[in-house]
Length: 197
Image (tube, rainbow, N blue to C red; front, side, top):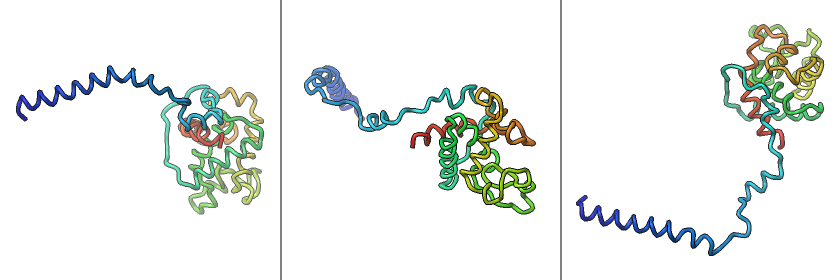
């Protein structure tokens, strides 16, 4: 590109920019909009945002894991949230429940896995009929299994103030007690996304 042509192009661009800068504020006052709030924000105001401090009161513990969820897994997360509300518990209980299910089953409602099964563990929370969690039919019902888990959670003194992995471990009695912590952020994200739906 020759020098004269380039200077001409830059000069025209500079004039256009300067004209926009100087004319911009003047034309902005010419037509004051009646409602400058975007429609999406107005709709969002109808639903109070979930307080993230309630979801992760202690901050996440350690490195976090994340999996992409399919429709069935998302539906199971929503079922856990619905059961939490039905139990009269808050968003933090939903976070603990979803993180527990992410660790135990990756939010899949697992039936008997044959030789790969951990004893007779079933469902979203890998609960065992032989340990008194319920019948196989009950344990593989997302609402029932969530409410059973949360019944155990309610029996833990001070669960609301415990780190997630400690609260989950007290109910689940896992061989890997710290494993629940890695799912806290994804569980909190799911609760924030679906609690008010």
